[in-house]
Structures are given as structure tokens and as C-alpha cells.
Length: 503
Image (tube, rainbow, N blue to C red; front, side, top):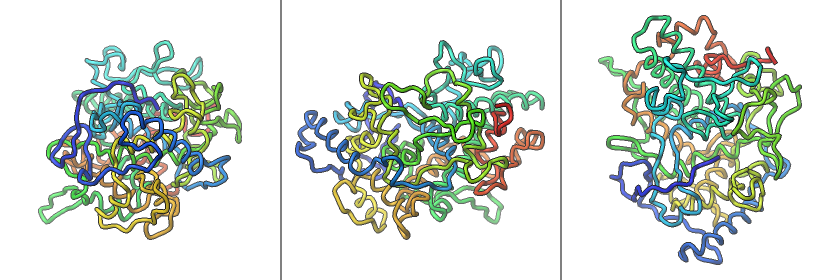
């Protein structure tokens, strides 16, 4: 999970009137600071003490050794990596962990805070022509060796894509690949229908389908249903005038452009880390029961990290990661780990320390410790203070680390009703922060279908309706837990392998 090393002098102050790349939902709340032997107020000299404190805390409380303490959900694992793809599309903070303590307001979002696929399209065909086939409006696509399988386009192994972070691991790379291929299919259809400006037509349709999937298929699965329903509502009045209303505008509001709330990007939306499995089976060509670790121990490489050409044995068979008509229970689709404070051991062995990659004794390789340190350095408020601000009851604060907003949200999700969801999805506070932010981003984007064409649905789109019958884009809608026009539709639109055929 590479996040860059540059610092830009852009300030996100604690003001309700600030409009910029990053902002705060609760600027009036005091930052939460843990009590450690070397006070945080000591400045840069306290950095190592803070890191040591959370490294010890994570080792004692957050590592699910051998998977003994966690459990599975019914959420297909493909949604973890859709969530990572969405994260890269809406936020990119390049402030290094070591520099954040200098000035926690020196934040700049190098993504547009909209669900507009700028991580896919980049600056467009003219400014980033290397992303596209010469003389067309289609993306370049690579190949997996001499096989018929596709890979991201590459030059000397490096992916030529709008956001290099989407080549961090092999699964999210193939989510990105699915969107590239989906655009190409839509472009060909626009040309076949003799539409003017086929690139723009294909891009608009794919953006809107992506927004539909993000809200209808993704956020609905991770948030409590009553909160998802309240966060963004379709309203038809007597006119009839069809509009979408955001239900949590008192939490997340804007004037001209939506900003990225740090309470979301640094805490609430990092719930996905606890859903990651220690390894995955990729396709039937390897045989059932034979998979790959997410990350290996120091010195290993036979895992699912990206950054190079896609091996054929790690091509994703999508009915093993999403609920599709060909998925075969009980083993497939592979599902996520529970929403809880336990992370698999693999996430203590990440290859991010430049000198000691995958060594669990270095904080850059230990994801949970990094999250907790960043929350303090970004001056996030105490979880109980956020709950009180929203008029919500909160879990008992048993130890000081329960006030860390990210850790609390995982605890809440794991807890029982009325605040929690027994580990199956986010709890009340987590759901509100995530659903309110997504609703705000979608309503804050003047070019989203929620604003530009509120009555739009995929089956009414001229490109999608023309392709649906020929490609069976919506055939998985009846599978357990699926909604019409969900992520499986994008996979089918892309033409990536859905079942075991071809392996």
C-alpha cells in the first residue's frame, strides 16, 4: 500500500467553512492523545515512543494468530478489493507517516474526492496518451505471457495505469483491469451504435455504473441497512420531480465541492483491513484447496503482492471471489473475515519498509500499528466524543486505546445489537460515518447521475441495455445477496474469466 513520500504546503484547518482536498467532520472536538511514557507534546522526539506503544498494543490485541480468534462473514472477498479500488479513486494522501506529526493539517488529496474513476482515466487521452491505444478511445491492455488471459498494460514490468497503487496487489490489479476492459466494451458499443463522441459516452456510462455499484452494491453490504436507507433517498414529488436527498447533511456538508473527511479516510473507511484473508485460492487451474498467501514472511515472494507481470496461476476466477451463478458453495465464493479488531498475521508482514520489507518488527510493515499512529498524528477526536456529538450511546471504554476512532469502530462492529452488528458489517457509528461520506461525495459531485440524471438506472442506459441481452450482464442478480447491476455485471462486461473455463 504505497502512499508516496512528497509533502505539499496545503493546509486543511479546523474550520467548518474550509473547502479543500481534506477537511474534518468534527473540527470542534479535541484530538485524542494516548498516555505514554514520553508525552506526545514532546514533539518529534516522541515519535518513536508513540510507534513503540502501538506496536506493542497491536501485538497484544489485534493480531489473529493462525486465524484462531476471528471468524468469517458471508460477504464475498471481491468486495474487499473493490473497496480498495474505490479508496484509491477518492483519496490519495502522500504525507509520509514520519512527517505527519510535524503539521497534521498539511494534507492534500491528490485524487478528486468524487467517484469519477479519475484513477482509471487519468488526465485523459491527450494528456496521458500512454494509457490509451493510439488513435482510439480505448485503454491499452496487456497479456499474461502467451495465454489468452489479460493483464494490465506494462512497460518493463511497470503498470501503465492512472494510479500505480492499483498494482499493489494482484487482486485489486484485476479489479482495475476489469474497469479498463469494461470501458473498451462500452466504447465498441458506442461506435457500433454510431454515437457521437464514443469515448465520452463510454466514460459517462462506466462512471455512472460504477457509482451505482458503489452505492447500491458495496455501501449497502458494509453498512447497517437502516442507515444506508437514510443516508441517500430517492424522492419523487407531485410534479413529478425526481431528486436524491442526503439524509446526513448535518454531519457531512459542503459549499461548492466535497472534501475528503479525515475521520473517514484515516479511521472509518479503514475497516476493510480487518476483512482481508491470510491467503486466497485464485483459479481452478491450481486445483481446489491450493492458494497463495496474501503476503509472505521476510524473503518470500510466492504471494499476491503486485508490481510485476501477472502470473497465469494468479489470474482471478471471479466466481471464486463474487457470488455468481456458477459459484459452488460451501467453498466459493471465498468470503471475508469478520468486521472486528483482529487482523490476520499477513498484515504484520507487509513489504513497505524500504530496508526491512515484510519484517514484523518495523512499523511500516505492520498495518494496524500504522493506522493507530496515523490517527493520533492526524489529530482525530476520541470515539466517545464523536458518539456523543451525534447523540449516540457508545461502548464502554475499557482501556485508553478504545478511544482510537479506528479501533473503536472495529470493536463496535464486532459487538452485539443495538450498537454492533455481530461482526457481519459496521456498527451504528461506523455505518453513519461511512454512509454519510459516500452520500455526500455522490451528492456533492455535480456530474454524478444522482445530480445530472436522477432517474438514471443501468437498464435505461442505451449502451448497457444494448449489451445486457447479448452478454447477460445481469444474470447474477438473483444469486444470494446480490442486487441488480452489481459488481458481477462489471466483471461480465469486462469479459474476464468468470468460471473455470479456459484454465
